[in-house]
Length: 227
Image 1 (cartoon, rainbow, N blue to C red):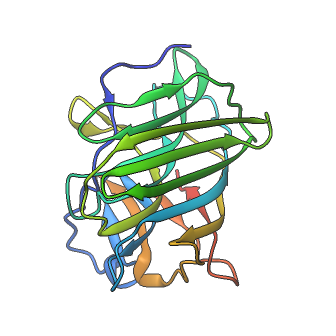
Image 2: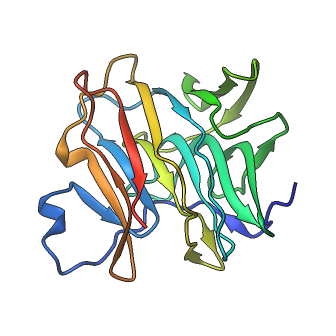
């Protein structure tokens, strides 16, 4: 498996737009799309979800994408996260699982991941600065856990499809099948997603990735690659 070593995931990079698209979506980013809950009365101490690893379709260009859950990173530079990568590198799709705590780079989880697999991620605060990162591949039957130190402000929680950064700029994301997030939970409860929580990815005046409205339970949604 070939994984680019200088690929980095970053906090949300707001897209500076003069359009009125933000009136139809809660936020616009150059590298994120999905749903974000911003701090209410309680700090965010637990996030979870299931999602389906997308299919990466052939492309003439190298491209990169990730689907993940995390806490922080929306309005600050802290972030604890875990997810899957789905890239197009050297003429073939590359899939793998990972976890990451900024500013450190990703740690690859050396377990099999393929398109169509159902993943379950859970990030839980254990003590004041101790967290458990849990990622399972429900299709393949494996589970990974690690306990790490993290001291971010717990001010946002995310369910995201990202274009990671290459050389400091957001990468082109590959052509992907729609990515479905299900059974999303925040502090143990459904997050009650709304329009103000929803964000689209825009690069160079092009809309690249858009989340659909939440499901009827408001605890799941689909992210679609537009072009």
